[in-house]
Image 1: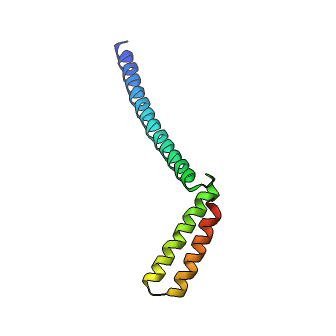
Image 2: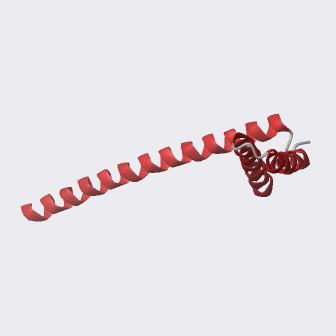
Image 3: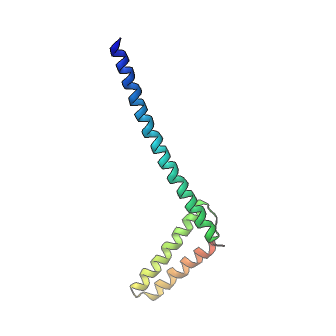
Length: 97
């Protein structure tokens, strides 16, 4: 009888530890998700754009195009730099109101 009580206590202790770990991870990941959502909301509101996934992806692609333009200018490729800059600015002006 005494052994059964020990294993019951051990099971409860192990269950409490696992529950604490799961609750802590839930708290961390929900905090990160809320922080990410607030960041995207604030950035979108400041830029005057929508918070849809397509708008965020278009913003990232437009910034990559501007980065490609800067790299092209650094390589002294003026024509390619102008093309990348115009494409990037066109895309960014399309999503930013």
